[in-house]
Structure formats: C-alpha cells, structure tokens
Amino acid sequence: MTLAARLDGWWRTPAPAKRLAVLRLLVGGFGVGYVALRAPNFVSYASFDDSQFAPVGLATLLDGPLPGVVLRLLVAATLVAGVAFLAGWRFRVSGPAFAVLLLALMTYRNAWGQVFHTENILVLHVLVLGFSPAADSLSLDSRGREDPGDEARYGWPVRLMCIITVLTYFIAGETKLRVAGLDWITSDSLRNFVAYDNLRKVELGDTHSALGGLLVGHPWLFPPLAVLTLAVELGAPLALLGGRIARVWALLAWGFHVGVLAVMAIIFPYPLLGIAFAPFFAVERLPLRLPARLARRLAPGWAARLR
Image 1 (cartoon, helix red, strand yellow):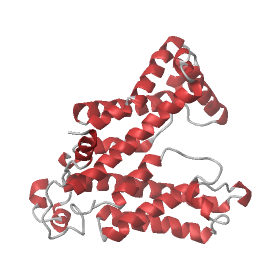
Image 2: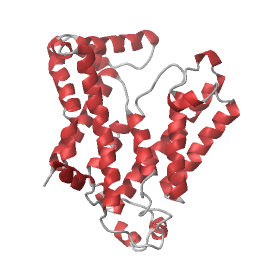
Image 3: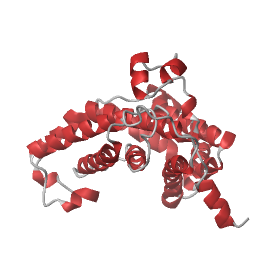
C-alpha cells in the first residue's frame, strides 16, 4: 500500500456520529459560555480611541472601528448563533454562522493593540465543526431520526481538529527553537521568563504565582522543565498516531497548562478544561446525564440509555 493510500485511509477512518455531536456540545458549550462571560469586554472596545485600532485578519476589511451599536449587534448575533449551534438547530445555517461570527468577533478583539492567542484553537475547532455534519446526532435537527452508523464523513472533522491542536503546539515549540535555539534549554531563558512575568504582575498589582517566585530561587529546576516543554510541543505530531500515544500526549499537554497556571498564574481555559484535547478521545462514551424529557426530544431511545 502506498503512502498516499495509507494517508487517505487514515483521513477517511469512520467515526460515530455521536462523537462529532459530543464535540459540538463540548466546544459549542465552551464557545457560548466564553462569549457570554466576555461580552462586556468585547463591547468595551467601542469606547476605545480610534487611534488604537490596528486591524488584523478579517478586521483589515474594515475602513475603521465598528460603531458601538454594530459591535453590540455582533456580540448578540454571535451568542444567538452559538446557542443554535449548541442545540443543533438548523445547523446548516447556524453552524457556519456561529463559526464565521466567532471568527469575526475574536479577530476584531485582536485589532486593538494586543493579539490574543489563547482562543485560536477554539475558533479553528468551531470552524471545523460549523462546516461539518456535527448535528446529525444529539441535536434538535436529528429528532425523530435514528443515529447514523460509523461513517467517514464523521471521521475527517475529528481528524482535522486533532491536526489543528497538534500544529498549535508544534508551532509553539518550533518558535522557541527558532528564536532562542538551544539556549532555551541550556540557559536561564525559562527561569528569567517566569521571574519577569511574576515580578511584572507584582508591580502592577495583578494576580501572580507565589510558587513561581519560590521556584526561581532553584535554577537547577528549569533546564529539565524547558526540555519537557519542548518534548511536549515538538512531540505533538506523535499524537496523530492515535491510541494510547495520543492519550498520553494529551495528558502531558494538559499537565503543561496546569504547570503554567501554577508557576505563572496564566490561564488557558480551553485546553485547561481539556476540551482542546477532546478530539483525541472517544468522547461519545462520556457518561452524559441529560434530563430525560430533553433526551426524549433529542432522539428516540436516548432517555433510557442516559439513565
């Protein structure tokens, strides 16, 4: 079998419709919650001075900042589309709508002087799900229909979500090597970064890590931590082999974020909650506990299986 045939077989590996549907629920739930909680922040950009507007991505299509009323409508429309996305209601419209609106909203937020990268995986995952058949199960659209079996059209979106997660971490590791080289491992680069970040937060009166401040007094700890960081990031492509290797890598990557939170008080909520790594697992086996009444509306027979 040729390499191309192997790759095609890997890409077209069938997956259950429920796996893609549960990913829609997990990712969509996080996305809607995130936009709802951050809505005041998104709306606040209407009060910024126009001189601070530095458009990136989709925002470069704008002649200038959005009027306040338009920005509020964008936030509201994203929330409405997100709820429909989460419920799987008229998904052929709500799926792409939420994906595009979320991309536009996050891009606009990045056009005000600071480019945030904590939501990149979220936005890309929503784009994949929004343009896939992610509402063929566990959705309002699928009411009264039997769940489809394992099919390739439910497998490739999961594969693509895995690739996106892997590339995000690999690029981070490659960037460290490109910018710092082996000094990232052999010098005090990581230790200095932890010390600077915590000291800056102390001076600004922001939340900082007391543990991080304690650890910088022990220089010998940081070279092994730097090696482990690079191993997780540059070793990310191994997760595409699937199985136990993927699960071990996902746990290590999640542990990396726990460590960042512990020593730098930096929160990456999407991976820290494990949702960024959900595509590597058989999430359709999660012990879902929906109210029986809602379960009966979503799909025949599900109420009994969820009890």
